[in-house]
Length: 283
Ligand code: NAP
Image (cartoon, rainbow, N blue to C red; front, side, top):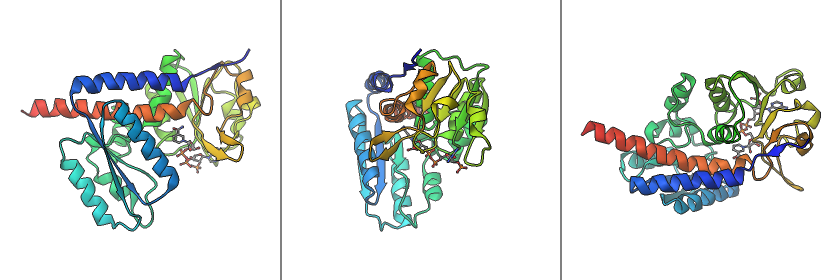
């Protein structure tokens, strides 16, 4: 039997509507993005985020700096945005061009405005089981599992990939939802032995079709985060033939991708709500 394809596009549209309603209720929500340099893919991502933010009623400030900008100037801009009450979310598009120190720039962001959820304060809260702002892609993965009522509690979840932005936070979220979690990476021996035992398989590697159909457990839920541009088009980490074995599968494109931007917007609305509550409490 063929898998149910998880429709990330439709779910992302639903999340964006929810965010628009929340933004309308909050009155004003603002995001500022910082893009340094001229990486073409980064420009495309920033344009997409702005379009989506504006459609949800979020005021989006687009700050673009030349590649030669000094670290001090980037840090000064972050400090300015931290102090600006009209800005609820700050997003620094990565990667930053060399020699800028990404960690220094990220750690300069006010954690309550860190809508990418990558400041050590937010990452630490997630690790301790008290998540605040969580990276958007892992949030999108969890929302997909929830929406399709895929049981997480007690399931064996296998995450392939251990980056700070996808693999590790998705593993933490699955653990928080009471899955038994295995994290695989480039040094894992016999990857198939692990993936074949996964009730929930999350692939976040960036190697087209690394997960062959016969590496997937029959009846499992497979979330393909991987996105690689090839001459034949966009490719995920999972061979689409896995649909013959899995119960659920996210397509590429149209799966996790659209969810990521929607969840950045959701994080921005959450940051705005939390900041309003903190300000009201302080008054
Ligand atoms: P990353 O930082 O390059 O991490 C890749 C991970 O895959 C690493 O942990 C690496 O292991 C592991 N890996 C590499 N080769 C492997 C192999 N043969 N077997 C098992 N694990 C292997 O990438 P990322 O930022 O997490 O992104 C992963 C993929 O998701 C990329 O294709 C990216 O474009 C995509 N992505 C998509 C979205 C979306 O919205 N759909 C969002 C973010 C990322 P080591 O740690 O040992 O090196």
